[in-house]
Image (cartoon, rainbow, N blue to C red; front, top):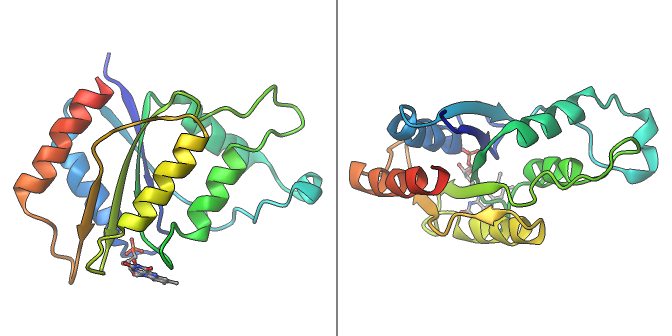
Length: 175
Ligand SMILES: Cc1cc2nc3c(=O)[nH]c(=O)nc-3n(C[C@H](O)[C@H](O)[C@H](O)COP(=O)(O)O)c2cc1C
């Protein structure tokens, strides 16, 4: 059976270059794995442990279920001020936060996670990718040793060889 891979875009922007990168990488591996897209829902509130009871938790449970049901995850993150965007951090915090009727919230524990970053800047978002790696290590995810960080200016994607090499590593990691 094909592995189910959740593709999380760390940007909520309509014309996100991280979503572009995700689509491109996906096109290389779509025959070997089942890919499911995941965009961050803008209506997800900031996590405030003191006011959980006031939040409609359906969206949160759905997010947690998406992570639970996936055999693996690919996250593509933009870089905001040398780190990952707040929106991405907020959903990771929600997913790893134990809600009152949960036994635990170890959704990332031993989950296979591959990390990419795309930025318009010359540093290609590597600092965001490294911070995301640290967060996933904290959550004891099983992290893919290959990462892909690319600069995308005026929607020009990196050359075929770069994507293809990373896609090869992903196939190996997820299967
Ligand atoms: C608040 C803010 C901070 C940013 N900081 C950085 C940064 O530190 N390094 C960087 O390479 N790009 C930075 N950028 C540029 C983004 O990486 C760039 O806009 C990228 O296209 C965002 O990805 P997206 O198109 O997927 O949303 C920043 C953008 C914003 C809005």
